[in-house]
Length: 330
Image 1 (tube, rainbow, N blue to C red):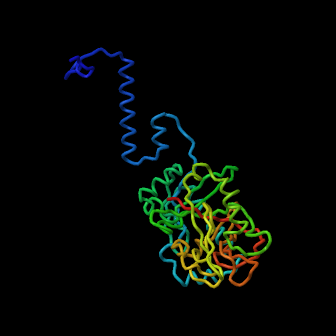
Image 2 (image 1 turned 135 degrees about the horizontal axis):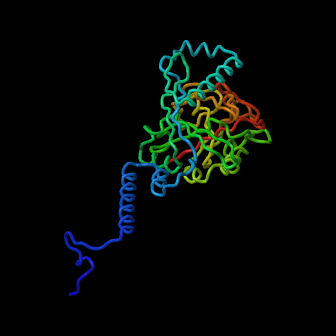
């Protein structure tokens, strides 16, 4: 029987190798070991790829862990004092808090202070991709790596900056992570013909979100967003619609209320239990009102919204309000 190539090699067999070939073997072996270690340690594949190629890549977005919820010594009495402010006073206070947050973030400081001031409890930046975010979620690490309050900044296809915040983990079902555009993505009406007939499923807003707005999202984000079902009650039956972008219900934002009819399914996001976390911002960083998915329970021409202080109300469906959709990754 003939000998195989393997039979030619014995323990401590010596053979001639050129220096350039030896260098190539050692280089590839070292690269393979680095990549294997990266896989074992769940290093984001962007980093692993740069290690392998030696070429630096521009980050598609920056993920920064920022908690905008109140600190522990925010007492009911202090909250009542804020509720007693005029709209102008609280708007100015929110602007100052936003400016202070920007200063602290720029300085990379870790600040824990009381009396309702903004607390940055996780300030470190990670350059990752949306596929890495999905990987974290699918491995069940979202409660630790993507807790509610985690903010993700990225750029839309039209060049505009965008900012979303994690508002829920395992909220609609086990293994999901829900994101909210805290920086509104634009302004649009609910229905041009000034009606809430057909509710959110048949609204101009629903079509706008899943057509024009979805098209603005980066391709890698589009690829990881899951389809979500919205259910709303009518006098006769329930109306359902499925889409990748959707608006929160009033109940999801503030819990039990008199503004909209409850569908018996929605749960309030714990992140929104603090009223100030329901405040959205425009392109200038100013607090702004934004639409919810719910038609008004009192008027056939109105939909409900959250105002610039996080309180709910209703307004004419034909009005151009802030667009702050949610999406789910799982």
